Length: 308
Image 1 (cartoon, helix red, strand yellow):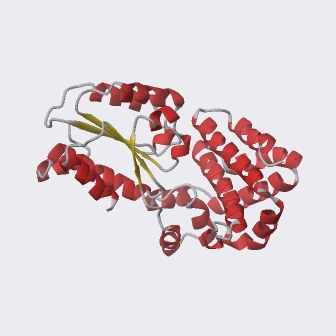
Image 2: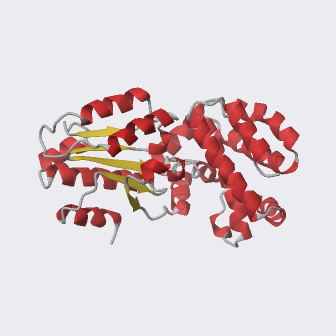
């Protein structure tokens, strides 16, 4: 049974939860399933109503998303006001928040209050490709829907077919699984130069910590805004994922396929505990970046508290 059928069955059995957390790395599929689920809840089979949901024009439906590094406070405030109103055309209200991990702590707390005391007949659908960055108290108040992992090789190949270089496509797959977002980033920024800076900095992290601290200056010259800084942390995470995949002999999932020899050497030198520590620091770095902590401090903490 796929995710869409699972939710459809819950609807027909009258077993709807007040909040769902969709988890997975296939952002496009999660978005489509969420919108289809909203149509079912609000419209049943009314095609005119479904069109309103698809175009975000249904008065009882709200979709929150952002192309920035964080969802704005004003978006959350507007959502809370909207969902506290009575339904107009349906017996229910539905809201979807895409990239839920992009909420600030203040934003998460606003939604948490909403989840703790939801208005009647109001259903939240939260989408996240990085659920580990979400507050535990949010997790505990949602019904989880787990999506199958995206086939990253197919995603990378689709980007390459659209004239993105394979090394850049591999790197960007650590940050997004949405084709349009990936292509827009590649058109706007020099991601090949960023990739070179990321690799150099990862090497310094593992061989020369004092130089890694100094190297943050050059790294942030490439990662000059929050979007690129977030991509950089994801790309660094991908570098260490390659190392741990090599340690457990799952080398068909490598992001830095051109660095196999270097990755092999790091896999021999680093312990699982060291790698787990680094993943913990990178997860924390993502959170700090979303909380508007100074990026230099964020990257310094990765160096200081990461692999020793």
